[in-house]
Image (cartoon, rainbow, N blue to C red; front, side):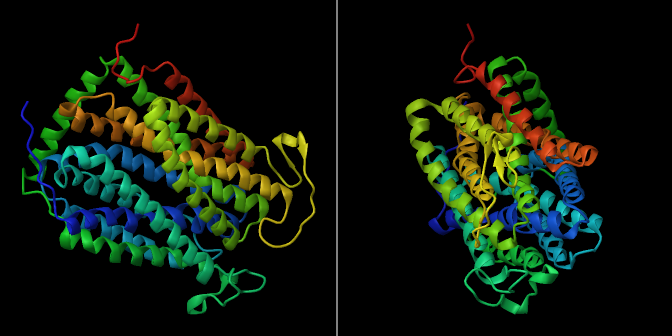
Length: 458
């Protein structure tokens, strides 16, 4: 098979493409995980269990739509050619939906807020599908890993800076009205009305709009290919053939199923961990924001160190270590409450010392959060390199398409079960405990998977 030689795009074209991750990440950091999500659960809803159930169902609904439509959009990305018109279409939906979160005042309709959040989530994911599909045309294959990881790190940095801005200049204490630096929130935002959290929707929309412009202006796009209808037919036909083939390659199939299960757990932990803490400790937006900053800083170092471990020990070992750390952290989180951790085996002083994370139980939660921060980047990055080491260069495109599909196919399952268990039992703690089952199930399947995954099993 003769491969087309890819000419390296200009420096500003590559940087324009990488800035897409910088543009996209604040939505996940300040809206989904650390600021708006916890506000929705702890202050918008009538009680935290109702809030967590509604938020979990919103994430699950978005994940279901993504799982159903991603294969079709993947085929369009491969066959039609230009990606920018599709990115612009979904960007418009995302920006409009995020802007509507400003109207999520306490006591307003949970359904409408969840609807706009879910629309933004779906649009964000589909935009990413098309943006990711541009990468192979920008640089030769030897540089793809470096460019991809640099963009991923740039995204983490962008999300962290946006979060710092919110905590320092927007998020005021409901008691004092001051931000963590002792200033009044910008734009006259009223923390008592949740305006500091609600502002993260329009802020993320504006950030996204500004920082995707370099990609539109400087990054080269593909030439026009097939019209949409024949492109969908051709892409789905190839997808069907590859799905039949992967079932005959038992090691790769087992790895994909294992990743599908544990990635569900990872996604649910990231999406719901902050909301769980906000409800349990009555954390303010400031405390949730500082918690998020800590996790993002630790994540940068976790990815840097895991890159060395991956080279020395292999991707499977890194993924396994990360899953153990995430499982320990999840057990720690669900076993911690005011005055205790590890299900009461370790009693903690209940004294409130004042300031951020003022009780011993909150500090224990921070410790478990550090484990999450160290592990959530490596578990995803080393899963990708596990797959890359398991297929040939000639088949990498279609197999990474299956890899992406596996990561999305059941992405609604863990949030749905967390939400359902929470709703049925009235206990957010029992709902979060479901995540442990996904992490443990994925680890069990991974343990019996060869490395590389295409290696013949004895």
